[in-house]
Amino acid sequence: MMDAIANSPLLSRLSRWFPGLSLVRHYQRAWFRDDMRAALSVTAVALPVAIAYAQLTGVGAVVGLYSCVLPMLVYAVFGSSRQLIVGPDAATCAVLAAVVTPLAAGDAQRHWQLIMTMTFMTGVWCILASRFRIGVLAEFLSKPILMGLLNGVAITIIVGQFSKILGFRYQEPYLLERLLHTPTYLAQTHWLTLAIALLTLMVFLLAKMMRPHWPAAMLAIAVATLVSWGFSLGDNGVAVVGSVSSGLPEFQSPVFELGLVRELVMPALNLTMVSFISMMLTARSFAAKNGYDIDADAEFRALGFANIAAAAAQGFAVSGADSRTAINDASGGKTQLVSVLSALIILAIILFATAPLAFIPSSALGVVLVIASVSLIDIKALWRLRKRDNGAFTLAVITLLAVLFIGVIPGITMAVLLGLFQFLKVVMRPDDQILGVNQKGILRSLGKGDKVKPIAGILIYRFNSPLTYFNAVYFKRRLLARIAQQELIETVIIDAVSCFSHLDLSVMAMIDELHKLLRKKGITLILAGRKRELLAWCEAAGVDVSDGDIIIRPDLTMAVRMLTNYKAAVSQGLAPQVRKQDDPDEVLAHSLL
Image 1 (cartoon, rainbow, N blue to C red):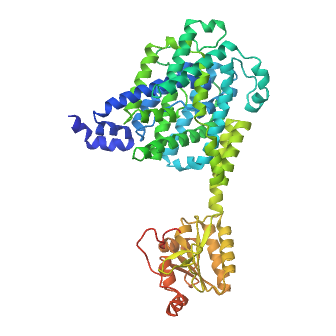
Image 2 (image 1 turned 90 degrees about the vertical axis):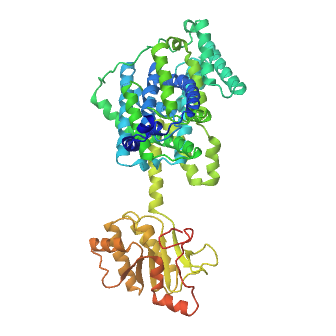
Image 3 (image 1 turned 90 degrees about the horizontal axis):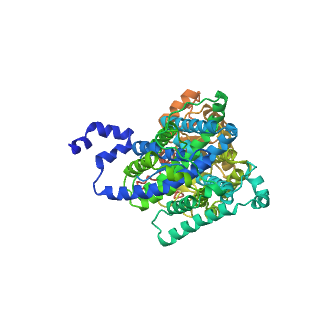
């Protein structure tokens, strides 16, 4: 019966939209033990982290637990990654807090509702991005920029948690001002609070050294909570979580002004970008490790539904949790059943075991957040960029400094703009090549070795970017400069495959001007490749190709072979016979050098 259901055509079709349903079709009983062990390990880490991130976000501890259950169940159905665990994340919580805190103006209820609203908006942005298949736009946050962003966010979180660890309250909202007033704040240290933080850190480090596979964060929080309960530290000036409501959340509709919602639209888009890129880096890493692929647009959709589910559960925004995903993989988790089991365990705690959470010291949670944030800092990798790619290093450092000195949200906005400008720079000012022919008759770039020679009287030009209105003038200027560097050019062949990707009237007008200019110099212009498209585009743009001044050939090889001056060079032994090559590593008319 189960086999019939698993192999049904309907389930097969549904699996395209709900990748998690493949669990039903292909699940093996032998995997259950590994998935259960991984679920227990993930839960042990997720519990203290969710509560800590709830405090970072500025909402009650139970809200962090709400943010785990339904999103994990939803992602298990919609996600295409077998190992990824979604949940509260340091970067997303820092963004939420940075946006919502000034808008809430100290009203705890409004703060919670704004958090839920921004989470819902983030989910909607994700689904829209998936619907229009624009997941690639999120990749404007390149890895170097994301590296600078995460380092900056991590440092901001660490500095922010010092107030909980040392037992004082910051008066300044920005990191730079907080650092400048460090001596004043150190004088306000509450020593009992600091002692609990040090105890938490010591237990964590001992657990990591003696039992590396145990949930160190869970053990550290448990010990700190026992001490807090046993010695009534909450009555002695040590901040604790306080009473945590049990049971399922009650739905509440927002009651704030519409103007506040407008303030969340663009920050929610920024949060979408950061969440998705961070999630995809984690998902792709573990997918590659385990030998399968993931669908970026499906992941965008899954993240969107997970965030809408988080908002419906009265929680806050979630993303791919790299630490919990790593624990899942290390524990042998095979499928998204790990997320389902972990979510059910956390749900049971919400329903029946929230009372002990009231005694958790805030300083212990601060230590957990600092430890989690330290894992995001990778200054060594940032420095290695300096030797590999100085431009990428500069972008990463600018993003890092922007987050530290002007804030998380402006830093993210700057990171997105930097990524966009980086992309535009590559498209607007790409590299280009002059092609020649080697002794085997294969077209290759000049400068790749002495064996590649130019063909007398012929300039073969390749522009390594799609031609569009904002780089058409640069293309023309570069080509004319290349022509000026050569002697006795009779024919110019442009590799149309590498640069003509779509109809652009500005580009076609530039080509028309170019061929008229070359004709005055006695130079024939040939476009090689995309013959059908180019003929249609020339007709649409009103570019006349009937007089033979612009010649269009199917590919580079034919364009060269049909030239009279090339045939003469071959007959005189001055050039080898250009030939096609089946080897994909060789340069063909449709490939890039």
